[in-house]
Amino acid sequence: MNIWVGIVIVIVIIAIILGIYFGVKGSADNSKNDSQKDATAAALSTNTTPTPVETVVKAEVAKPTASKFVFEYKGITGEEQIEISVNGKVIFTDNAAPKTYVTKTFDLSSDSYPVKTIVVNFKNDSGTRDVYVNKALLDDVDIKSRFVASNVAATDKARMESVAQGKFLWPGTYTYTT
Picture 1 (cartoon, one colour):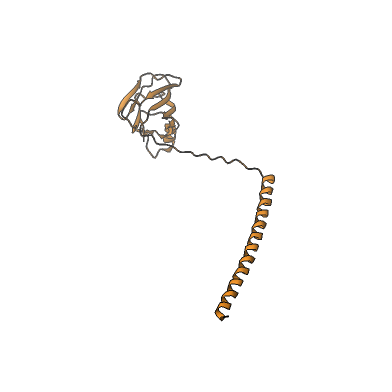
Picture 2: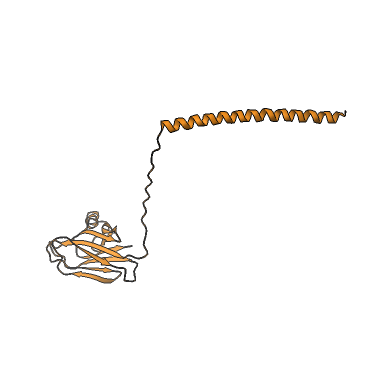
């Protein structure tokens, strides 16, 4: 027999033996891992209960056009005069604001908006005449605290806070800008 044929036969026999060894060992390890996995799964299923996870996503969606503006206000004396305009167009005038809160809802969908500005013009402040705004909603988004008064300096923090709370205590315009 040729020496090379003998070497090839020995290599083939070694390969077969190694293949059998690792094949048997691998399947024994797999069955061991499977039994360990089964035991772990059983322990988890009997010892723990799944807890529900609630995910809350909040997002403010900017609409290209506004369809509704809700304004709730009152006057202190009942003599206050206000005018509301949207994008420069007057949509409401009240020459005797009631002493109790009244809510006005304006449908803006028929006009060619988007809303860029809402202006409340307090026309006749004098002494105790003041306007209180309880609610200002643009498509259900509260914008009351975002009005800026024309007669309040940006450095006057106390008056700016009064305006943000809906207290229109000085004559002039109160403007919301998108």
